[in-house]
Amino acid sequence: MEAQPKPEILLAPGALDAALRADVRAGLTATPKTLPPKWFYDDRGSALFDRITRLEEYYPTRRERAILVERAPEIATLTGARTLVELGAGSGEKTRLLLDALPLDTYVPVDVSGEFLADAASKIAADYPALTVRPVVADLEEHLAEVPGGPAELVAFLGGTIGNMVPRERRGFLAAVRSLVGEDGAFLLGADLVKDPARLVRAYDDAEGVTAAFNRNVLAVINKRLGADFRPEEFTHVAVWNAAEEWIEMRLRARSAQTVRIAALDLTVEFAEGEEMRTEISAKFRPSGLKEELTAAGFGIRALWTDPDGDFSLTLAVP
Ligand code: AVJ
Image (cartoon, rainbow, N blue to C red; front, side, top):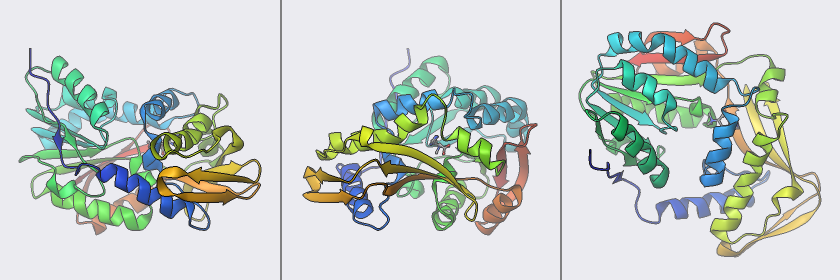
């Protein structure tokens, strides 16, 4: 039996808590109010996201998996990667497609949630006994430069999470990934594509209300971690397509005028009836734009694959 992989922790103690406080204070005192999507993912939020990925309306996970199933052998031949660094390591299901296809000796899952990571890493370690698993707890916005890798590594950022960043954030992030990849690595990026707005909105406003519960859960997270008294059921889930920016926006709309107290911040916030607070952007891309952004960050495009319906993309970028 392999020893349990022990996560390497790049996050300073208390750093996440400080980031949550700073984000909530800045977001709730801004006009319009906003909250970053990063805080959706406590245990309940992660379980709700997991349900989202299996919804009929939410196509990205299935489409990306289909591309991976088809292209994993090519990714293996084109990169010959021995180390896989996975940024924002998911629940591991798509990861396994890469682990099965690549001649890896090391897998480095990187995630901000230590518990989630330790759990996912030990499952992988148990199923791939010949693989060295080195989980790293890190904030992707802060610690990319310190993530350990190795020569001939493949850095993967799957799921379309790049869509959570605005263009300026993407520029900084892609530049940091470019440094991480070095001169003989490669970068595998999953990104959702622009399509019929009605389908996009449905993917973010499902009939069962799972996405609505996921969206409201951020209020429960703030209640629990910062002693706030949000009443999540007093907020309506809203998903809109912003055609100018080409992103989906999720918002929470106050059903009534209300006052919310955030004890840990000594902050009181007023909501007007109908006031909307943005909780997530999920940018959708065009292949041309993806290529431009990657090229601007210093990458060359080795391949850009989509599923047969052209819904989702997987780009293999190289130095
Ligand atoms: C995990 C950021 C890729 O943007 O599609 C799913 C999150 N939000 N439904 C996405 C999400 C609402 C998801 N990402």
